[in-house]
Image 1: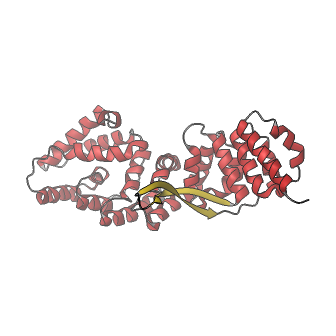
Image 2: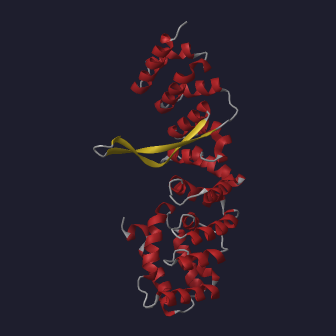
Image 3: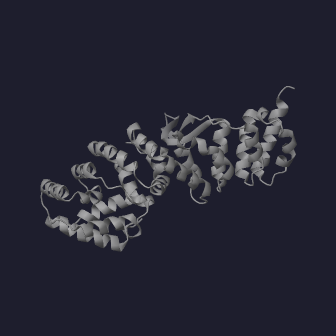
Length: 340
């Protein structure tokens, strides 16, 4: 993806103006800093990883300062004189500058992109920057607008669980953010109302922590996207949330050096008080074959949980979905094989 698709031309122009001030060692005006931050606010959090690279390269590509240490000292001096620069300098190529910017940053992100810019600093390749990011993110996330938090979280949740430098300390920052009642409520509403996007995968990642456990019955009944209803019903019936945690190499034949990459699956037990019979009835009547299939898969393990199975089995065996018919047939054969 080219820079023009991630960073529009007007944003590049503003970055260029700010770059000229930094090159000369001049203190930029507050209006120029605000204009750059306002431009960042218009960017998509989905593009934060590439945008981080492009902003860093573009903003400092024309530097005429010969010695890197001199450039660092000059930039840190500007930051001390104008702390508002911290919003931009979190993108700096020098880890010492990023760390210093995070230490003085007190402005709450007002857009999903700027919040995402802080979240990726939690996975920074420099350890002191990650430490500074934790201390910076914790108080700011307690004040960020719920809609901003939800938008950034929906874009990044599936990524941060696979970041290699992501530890329990960083994860705790995100858990606290989405455990806020206002954020938690908006997040649940987002999963109910949104129709497009990989919501099922995103929901599985959010279920790594118990932030959405109590919302699962509502998601199972009301979510517009069928895959979200299917995941919620699966988790409630199985009592376990599962998500992908990276990949690992599995050997097929070590002698011939043949192997394959397989996903690493982690899980967490979930206990939500529900009436299982009602959930199964609701799922078997769902308009989506995805949901009906999930219910049948769950019933192959515990078909005794649904005493009304005989009454609905004829319809399932004639279901319009071939997959549902196959699972229904499998369930019939499984029950028939059991001793009476």
